[in-house]
Image 1 (spheres, rainbow, N blue to C red):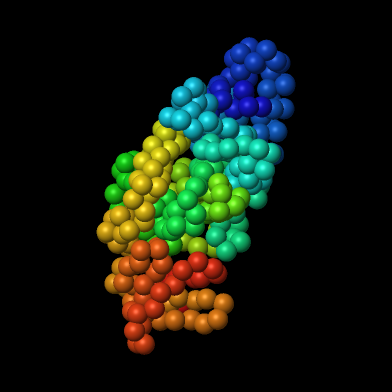
Image 2 (cartoon, rainbow, N blue to C red):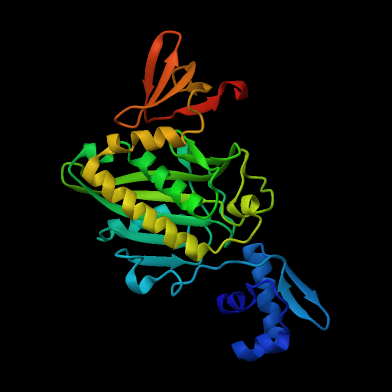
Amino acid sequence: MQALLKLIQDGRFHSGQALGAVLGISRSAVWKQLQNLEAELGLVVHSVRGRGYCLERPLSLLDMERLGVSTGLGTWPVTLHYQLDSTNAEALRMLGAGGCGPFVVLAERQSSGRGRRGRKWVSPFAENLYYSLAWPVAGGARQLQGLSLVVGLAVLQALRAFGLVQAGLKWPNDILVDGRKIAGVLLELVGDLADLCHVVIGVGVNVNMLSDVDEITQPWTSMAVVSGVTVDRNAFVRELSSQLGSYLHRHQQLGFPAFIPEWNQGDLWAGRSVTVTTTAQATHGVVCGVDVTGALILQTEDGRQVFSGGEISLRLKDDT
């Protein structure tokens, strides 16, 4: 089915006879594979007499050659999967089996994608980006300070490089456009902080998703919705990897304080009234940036308070 999907990903009509000739199968076998694509992947295939078959919308499939895997996206080996439970879970399994980062795991679809606070990350086939980077960390917990915020900055710069100049940040690691979520980051740590450990950096980006999805319970948008064109996901993977490499190396060398001005500049909620909800209480205040550890600074009636980590929800005050 993968070979057939590559042939029809352009969204144009292809005759069953021509497809069968390329694949070395009969026209009826082509039709059966197309039915399987619809059933297994949720794709819509149109059939028109005299014209052939076409996808309802063109796809931008990930391709190992176009990802530049021969150079490992610079120095990072890449593995690409048709389907996974989760790219983060796969990266953790690879590390558990003796793998050592940095390396990248990509998938066309996730069956159990995860976001922050245990939320499901909806992962339709070949529409968005499901990306995990296993990144080695040495030097103790200090090397993790503000890391998720730095990753958010890298994702933000990758989006802006593709023309989404209005994209911005929401603490701690969401990227928004026009108040709607377009990307998020999930970090998971494995290993001994006193020695060498790895952080698995999961990045989810809504790239070419257009249709409403019932499972998504918050306002969302995608690169295609904002730009009005289908985005080349291979080119975006290359850009994201380049930005991550740059930002992570700078973070290793300089620490998070060097990024505070850039973070505050990209913070869409700076100076706005919000409610921070923890397991203990809800606190109202005005966003005043982040401190040297990446914690949120909130100006409240009782003075400045700092929030970091844990089960924290941040909402605009009018939305609570």
